Length: 135
Image 1 (cartoon, rainbow, N blue to C red):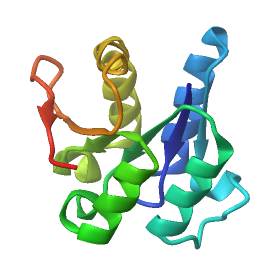
Image 2: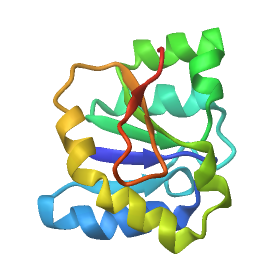
Image 3: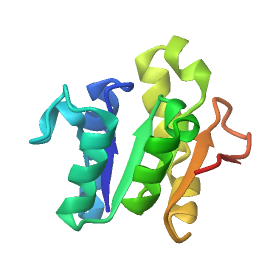
């Protein structure tokens, strides 16, 4: 499993999660670290992820993926799995964001067994349930 963080997230989250996932032979990357580059549009990075042939999980703070028809279609066509960070992540200190993401990783792992495409919201509270979003 490869985890992709887009421009709506900080590279620190990708780096932190990458360190956590390495023991499982998984990895996390931020868009700035990929050949498509930080200035790639959502459609471009979705196409890039699909073209790699790898199993990708997308983590984003961008809810527009679920609202923009073209992006939803591209997400489905790329057969991506995704998680949208709840709005509260944007105003939360980075160490708390990373802590919550790693805290919830076993729950995320459980959802990864679902067939793609899917999109869930990662809540801000450790005990809150995940909410499935339309794709």
